[in-house]
Length: 253
Image (cartoon, rainbow, N blue to C red; front, side, top):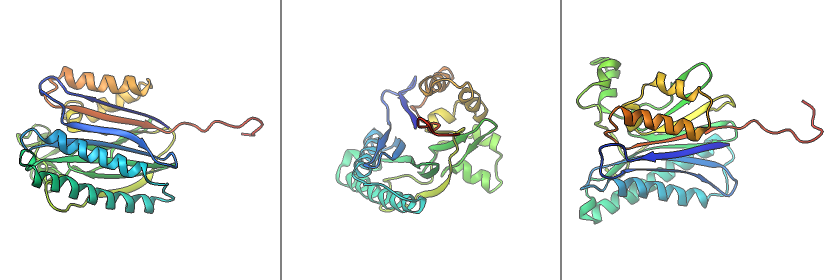
């Protein structure tokens, strides 16, 4: 498995409220997380870092998962637990009151990918032919698009395009959207915050991934493009590819 995490403060913000990382459990299974913090007297970074660190801690203590069903059950329970911890911290610390974070999580079990998310941080799968957004934004503009009140083009320029309808840590309980799907050898998984997708179109993401550069170079190019266009927000991403299994000596094809 090849995986790359990168985060950037951007060109305008005084500090970075995004968090994320790539972590492995006892069975060497991969979990990736991206979180975009918000609110609470500059405590967005507290919310996103808490969520990431708690997920890391719980994942690294996990012996291993054997099926997509197990992965979905695990992530639903852990996200609920993490939400409770972040919410309680906000209630007990005045400077953190109202804080929360978006979150998008990927668990890889061989060729099966389990995705969980809350908010408007996204997951994409990019193949040789297409780019597909595999999460549905929990945002005001997406709700307006789905109800037919505005078009997708209008959503991209809507004055309230960054209003999220659901976040981790802002309420006492929350549910994440979870799905599992096949993850093929020729595909790339992208997790990212809206600091990227507000500035770089899906087609541009597709083209930069298709350049077939090292994942670190692809990540740097995506972030550079978002910054060239203003970089008003923090920008974070994770890129993941499965590696072709190497044949053992003497193994036939």
